[in-house]
Amino acid sequence: MSFWLDRNVFVTGCTGLLGSWLTWMLCEAEANVVGLVRDSVPDSIFWRDGLSNRITVVRGCVEDLYLVERVLNEYEIVTVFHLAAQTIVPIANRDPLSTFESNVRGTWTLLEACRRVGGVEQIVVASSDKAYGEQSSLPYEESTPLGGVYPYDVSKSCADLIAKSYFQTYALPVCVTRCGNFYGPGDLNWNRIVPGTIRSVLRGERPVIRSDGTPVRDYFYVKDGALAYMLLAGKMADHRELVGEAFNFSNEQPMTVLEITDKILELMGKCRDLRPVVLGESHGEIQRQYLCAEKARTILGWFPRWSLETGLSETIQWYKKLLGDAATGSSGSVGQIAKATELDEP
Image (tube, rainbow, N blue to C red; front, top):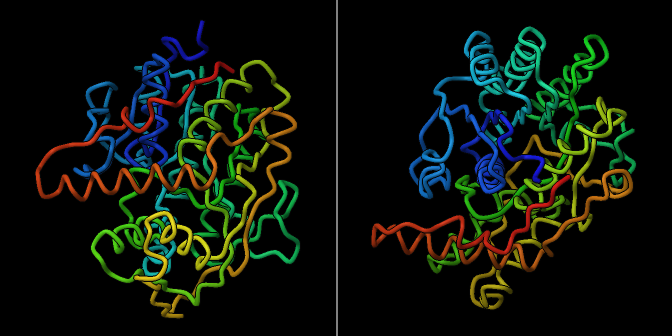
């Protein structure tokens, strides 16, 4: 029998890129999902593909302690995935207070609610590779000190440390995930390099790179990320020694911004036609940042299932349908893209 069958699960940030896919996979595994929703974004896969009709939707903000306590109590939540966050670096640089409010206060509120209500057996808190800040030794391992400097990075360093504090002080069953840059079907943040490049190519325009093209990052397929979160929560149930640990998840294939852009152009057959426009204008971002996932591979038995080429190809097809549907008014389906996904029991 599946670990997730009839399990009461609370997902914050369920309408985001990772949250939508995680919610879909939990529904497919027949979990009872309660999702916290702040805003309605019509083109997100959460709304386009009817996920709102498959889960219990609670309207509100993760910073609202009494709301979160009510959800945990009334729906008898056993497993929590805390994904709600402001995730866009330029937005964090323009408005750090709202980012700190969502990412830092939102985390301590969620954990405090879990502590007060009790009964929650697994809490997976989404941190980020940005929590490490800029380090001279690469790739980043889980033992690398947390050292964010810029607003988004600091917010994730703080959230990460708060999660550890609640484990150490109150024995709250928390694990932390640190992933690279997610990409995949459903990302509507067009200033990110993958969706922005695909949209530009589909419009016959040259893609725009804000930086000088040399920053190095992990690019991590969102379906691999969702399955990693589910695997970790399941392992926490059977292996209490994992509680309190942090895990990096990555395909361990770091690329420059220019390299990922060129790969998209290659897959879309536009290598020669639409050379990128390199602005060299970005600031407040780390130059080189990528992860080692050996701990997850060794301890959890985790591995990525999608190659970069396969993940990008699926992503390109989704955007082709999305932007084509904008003219016809029709709707795509997560299930069409995800039907090859297998859900492992932990």
